[in-house]
Image (cartoon, rainbow, N blue to C red; front, side):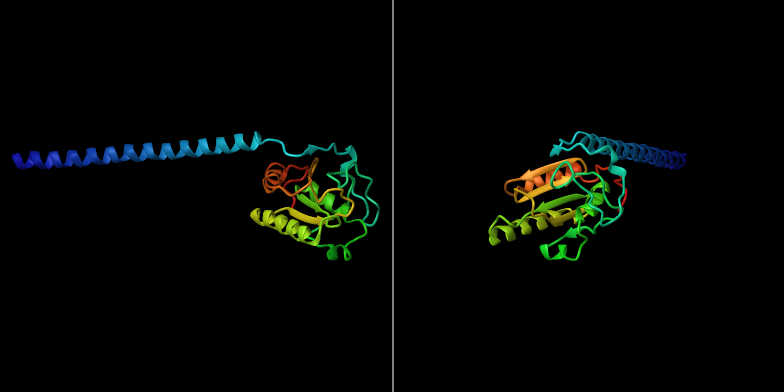
Length: 202
């Protein structure tokens, strides 16, 4: 009789153990779901409350107009442009040197504004004013920031009409630099990349 009671007790304990384990696994699973939901909510809140970076540039209502390549696309409200009439083709992401401009069309801004429409951020730099050492340092700094973001939807482009060494633009945003500030450049990318009419375009 004692043996039967021991067997019943052992079975009951095993059943209780399995029941406790199931409850624990259920609690852990719901806890993981809760943590995931909180993390997602936090990310969404952060995305929607990021501080605005850069001057707001009103984009003309006819920005959707694609004009024939080779046709002068300007004038734009700002130099360099932060949106407006443009070509239907874009340039590849990457760092463009002064020597690269010679093989491009007469009006590269027509294509670059198309990049902006797709959510790109452009570093427009001017090496006409700084010394060669300063120019090399500026280029290196721009490259380093672009590399931090894996170069995704980022372009650096020489622009001789600037009165400062660097201007960054995204669609409807512009930030001027008297000297390079890495934190500001990173913040501009984080706040403005893919904030454009066609952010899902390549």
